[in-house]
Image (tube, rainbow over the protein chains, first blue to last red):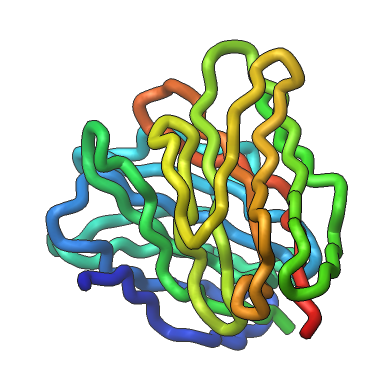
Length: 114
Length: 110
């Protein structure tokens, strides 16, 4: 069964550094999402991406964040200048269209900002 | 604004006992409701959705629009049901992003 994959599984970075989190969605899916979960808190929506552009974004997704689908298979989340409060688990998800819009989640990348 | 509330962070039941995980939502319109489950060290996966009206692994959930609830139930809990359960809501927008509750950690005791 196809799965969403994410790399790396754990990323440690220093405050102010740029990080890129990578995701490979399921190949025939059209919608792509990033969510995050700060330790002890709920899973929060960051951004959705469809047809090579952002379709929705939350208040969390400010100018420090960007997403890209550089090559038709990868879907990346970039944080330009990390802050301590960006430490969280970041989940990528993808879904098909119509009635098959179930979101399939990746295993997550744990980002630790020191 | 859309919101999902799961009032219980932790829930323990004995094997064979009934279990109910509560979920209430707030949404102006007709939402779509889901239950996601996360077993230890595994990814989030869809358990069931209200439009399917199906039973998965013995779990059912009925959407009650009057009470704005979507409680998850199982008549006889099994030890393998121990996991984190998240209720989630999707609006009718094109992007269908999910709003999650804070989750309930279910432990089924032997």
